[in-house]
Length: 294
Image 1: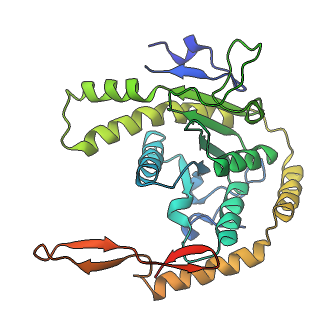
Image 2: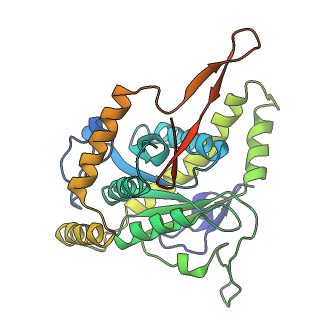
């Protein structure tokens, strides 16, 4: 495998490299001081990072969580990730979830986005463009080896998605070949399927090392906006995105009180008939078009 230097990676490398085969973060991370770019860095000097990607299936949720944990590990705790799946209570309106995620993204110092699938997730695209509007250095990664919907053109290389989501500054695109990379990790583990967590951790850390290097690279690129310009733009963007920060914070506090007062509000457990084992049973009710658990 070629080294990073041999691959000749560039900061604004939008044709990609094929590799390998508001204050709505957690309250414990709010205390910090503004850095040279005017962004509030979390306590202990950890860099606030936003994780954008699909979260619709169990595979998405587990994959996001494992990768974020691996990224924090391989970076020696340098990055602190915001994962919407962990931070957003589901017994709130769609707007409250959208506002909370957007505020968190606007407060981030770096972001990563998973551009997976034949058609990349529309919500992830919106978050990526929000990040680019605010000059947040970003890493886009793709492990899906399918061609996607990239258009033909005169470019020698092109991305596996619509060209309008390419060619942005302070952005690094990294391609990884999922099945080949996985098989390499699996065979290096001597084909030991059990425990599966061992292989999952090894594969996540393999990906994390590549992505963390790209994150370091884009963060080293000079910002396009002065701190005062960025803060002014952030305020304007939040307004144009329909977000009232004070209102969002009040809703967040209300949601937190609900979690404390109703700790079993998201999932119920019902006794099964197989000798005392329990199954998770999520009964849903509709609330203004949003299905939430009772």
